[in-house]
Length: 486
Image (cartoon, rainbow, N blue to C red):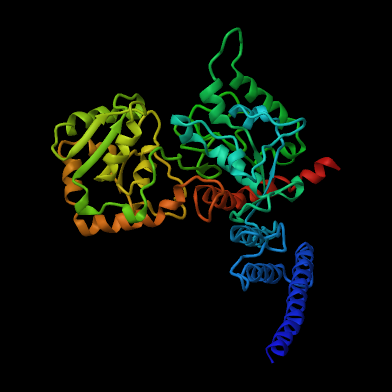
């Protein structure tokens, strides 16, 4: 009897092992087939997400311990989606593809000249390959960086150019306000990618044996280039967009190119014939201090200082008011009014001071505007604007009185006037401005990739609003042009 029972047991083991082998072999074939399917294109009848999910689940089944407690090796040596982060990356890429902008639905269609690199990224030291005009912007760590310090505050040209380049890259998610087109006849605006502020900051002085500065040479070459283009001749340059954010940039070329739309910091050093609010765009400075997160922003009672100002005090022209205010305010107990610069941790000191102050002074300097306004916004310190001639970014859609205090220069220098005014602003009113500051702060942030309603996107939206009047002027001028050419 014992022998018979043993024989039966041994006979049952054979088919069990055979069945196990068949199961493993079938599983192997299934996984291999699914992996082949996962290599199909986007038009596969079986969605990739489904295939990926089955493959991952099947692989996890094959890693279960067997009867002896050992974990067998996976029959798949190199699965396509071996890690969860790989699947996540694929899903993000799919989202990117879904968000590709349609030029027909864009607010602004922009044609950008393929100027040689010495006009733009070459000024950053970038050297592309043979016949390569633009850097690869699909990988953020490979994009040439803009120099820091005070150079950075006038970097609008850099961010706008990057944004247009990104509109050609499918794996970069960005707003669809502006789309680059490659046929100028389809464009609403012709963008001139000259890093004029950087050119001025770095190359406006004659070096070595040079007889003419690099900055001047680039401007002269730019004027020659534009005057020879059919796009410029077609509209007289009125549909062209040129960034000249530094007040001293484009000094040589601005009068020759004054029919174009400029992106500027202010109109302080321009005649009204060359630059004015009707045709040109005022863009924010890139703030120097680090943005304070909304959740970390100190409220009224957490800001012990009433008024804060740190910067150059002795200025010329309209900026002479700074020294008048300095002597009026420097000895007040709840006022910080001191000389400061970017050196010796000046930026970090300013950030701490502004973050702990209720009001931050933005006083006219050599020009009506300064970066200090945007530092105040970044730290949610209520700006006090003492600059009668200032023009403000996006003011056609933003009411600055909701988050700023405006004081006429003639009133500010009256003894006791400014402090009495600010001390009279009660907590409730200050908190209302502070809340509004937190809500609008994103409009003044430059970043790559750009985000909806950030500084880059807001500039494009402003340009699109300007284009209506520009088109009207162009069309009116063309009324009798056909008769002249016939």
